[in-house]
Length: 220
Image (cartoon, rainbow, N blue to C red; front, side):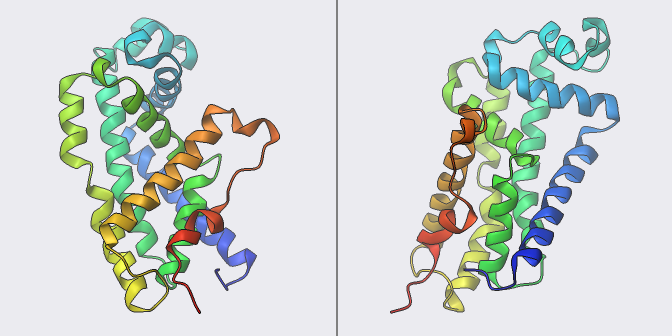
């Protein structure tokens, strides 16, 4: 599908993963806040919003409960910060991929590789999406409003990228917004399946080429 060689694909996707991480670190703030937030994502995704307490996050991060409270006044504030970072990252990740040299299909491939990498910072975003989908009634209303307001941000960059690929004959001709939604549904589904099965217990998961196959223009 991508004809730049294995090394080029690896370099580009690894670069995107590094950019994902840098964006998170910049948005999170100092190293202590970053550590609290990383552990909060894991605890929230495992115990749910309602079942999580600050003491659970503190214990996971190796801090005292009071120390975490000195940074965040409540689990609601902490959760809102995680959602804010995830929403910012969702749009930025596509923007960063769009800035890479290469064809639209190549850039989509590298983005998908970076999204699906088990060690990618994007894994926190997929975990959060799972939590938002499975426990909507427990999520604070301000967080729900933030998600509803900014849900479409990744599509601001992804839809034009798909349209560029359509003009070049690389991508299938269909409604670009519907294709963008389908793309995220597939990638998120693969990522969440891996998370829910603890990295698959050795089971193989679809790679970037398989995830993108539906989007590639057919050549008769």
